[in-house]
Length: 86
Image (cartoon, rainbow, N blue to C red; front, side):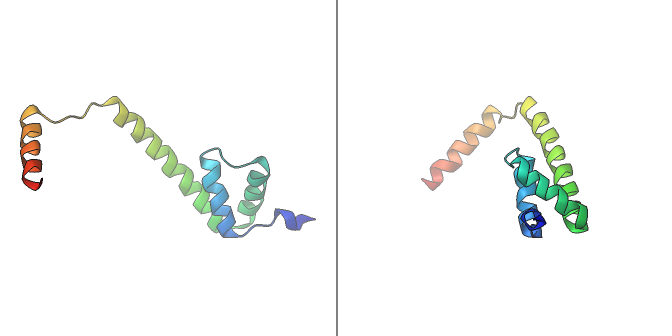
């Protein structure tokens, strides 16, 4: 009966990635949590994956609030360099 809950480490990392984007089903999350309780490597992977996701999401919000653009002179210089290649 418990064999339906057993997954490999490869499957666990896949489910971990899916859970990060809210694409994992409840059953997959249950299997992942049971696997993580037994496997220290997958537990570490899950922890690092969560940390990196939070870090990147925080930076993405910061980048969206800033406006990045070239100065007019830089744009003109870039256009002229592009004309040389065409």
